[in-house]
Length: 160
Length: 460
Image (cartoon, rainbow over all chains, first blue to last red; front, side, top):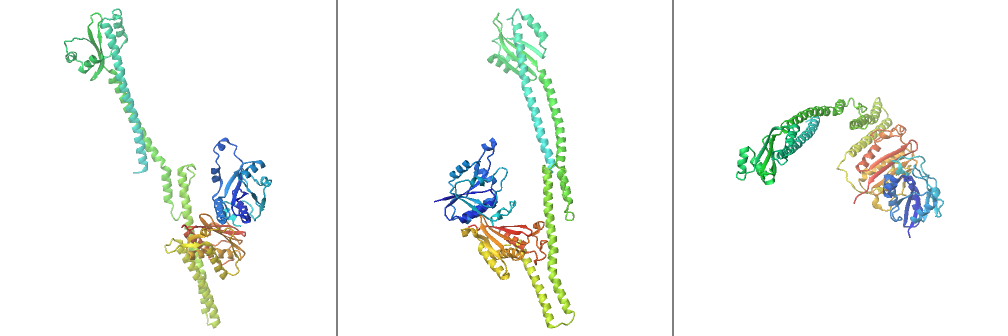
């Protein structure tokens, strides 16, 4: 039986430490991973007209992030089922979030304990919404380097 | 041929052919139109003269004649022919008699009316019949086309003069423009020619040109190139001074030691001691020259290096064993939390000896500059690269020194307390470059130094 876990991300390598620890922690095999990136939907009609999930993902995901995902995939090859997918969440309230969770059939949620997701002008921190969910929530803690780290340093953020 | 001339000629040819084509089309169309128009005028005259000559319109005949005289202008060489249609006379004879083109009369016979041109004289005619007598007549009007002979000629002259004038203007303009469009480039050429090894710090000024234009871009590209060349020069200069300094220090010690011990007769113990010192310095000299040799060998792409399939984790364990022997106090931890499950993803195409050299240099540096505090080595692999990250909590590298750390013999300003020659990191980087990999260093003074090495996976 596949087990689906939901992990919020800010599309920075550092946030993937939650996933790393979560995969270490989980005992089940056949784990499906859904990375959730919370972002406000554009209000411009033209932007909505040409909205495509795929191109948006490839536009905002950095090479370092992709590389870090590959590293994690290679590390937990036996445990993972299918690809690690990045899904965008555009909702504002907990109803939308429950819909999102139902749609992806998430069984449990993993949240960072001390790490703060970095938000831009368009994205927001979904953790307060997630913590209201009626799903088993696990908190993962690791020593994060504070402050803004540059793109170049990003990949090393996974090596803690 | 120079680009300026090419441009001028091309521009000139294009403009001139356009103007000539334009003029000829105008002339041709006017020419065509003038004939059509003139025949129409002749035909009007034919129908008018048929009216008053053949007496079909007796009441108005006089008026028509008057009207024609007063209001229709007299054409050049205008003639009216009223030729009775007689069955006995052939068309050719009639034509000869009245001096008319034969084909024209034949056409009138077949079609009822016709137009023709002979030399500069134009004919229009048709068959009309006298209603009283019932006789048939050819009514023909001929005239010289004043319009063609004068107006068209005038038009042609205007066009020719116009074309010649435009030609001159276009030529002079294209020559002028082509010369001045290349002015900035000529300027750059002149300036670049002036720059030599003595005044390599000179730069082209790009302020004269608007920042977005191509010339400014060219100037900036030249400046970038010059900067790189200048840095290379500097590195070369530094290398020579550093290398000679590094080589001289042990040599000076050896000479000094030998000099002092030869000043007077000494006890065997003293000789032994000074010889030991000499040996120590000679060994140091040997080490420096060896590493220099390595640096030189790895610096160019030698074909002599044999590449084979190597497992990175094995290399790292072996290197750790090596360093354990030399420096037992080290605290190197190999972190396996990200090692891929599939061992294939740890295999690279490499040379074990060179990789040992590179990793031992980096690891021993990490131990040395952190006073043997823990050093962590992470091994991970993406789908294209094996990634080895070495983290230490040592003295770090000042930000101003970071760009120079790959220069041979360069040593960061905060390393005075540590022994070294500044060859290890350049050597390691050369080795990693030989493996088509990448070595990057991140550091913060007194916090950490992180070396990340990426080597492409072995391709089956």
